[in-house]
Amino acid sequence: MIALLLASLALSQSLQSEQTGLKRCHKQGEMSKDAPPRMRCCQLKDGWSCYLFALQHYKGLGVDKNYEIAASAAGAGCARGVTASCKLKAKAQKKADKQ
Image (cartoon, rainbow, N blue to C red):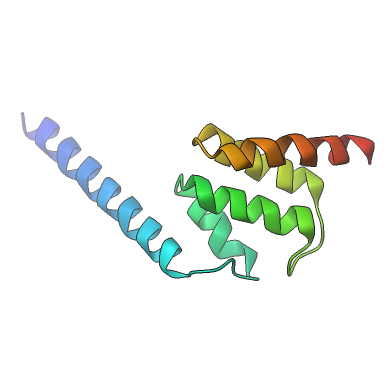
């Protein structure tokens, strides 16, 4: 019984931490030229952050163009329900395959 209670508390804290991280990500506003914060938000399962991180690498906005990273991040955004990310994944993958 105590183990179940502790597991429930740990899960609750983990979800709260994830929500705080996502709120912080969205407060950053427009796409940052600093890729790591977007990557962290993507790792927190925020689909739009994955899309923006992918777009940043696809277009070379503040970072070197990298179609492989763009395709991977866009795939994560697509898996999280961001339709624009699915389209970007296809375009980035085509360009990555040509290299």
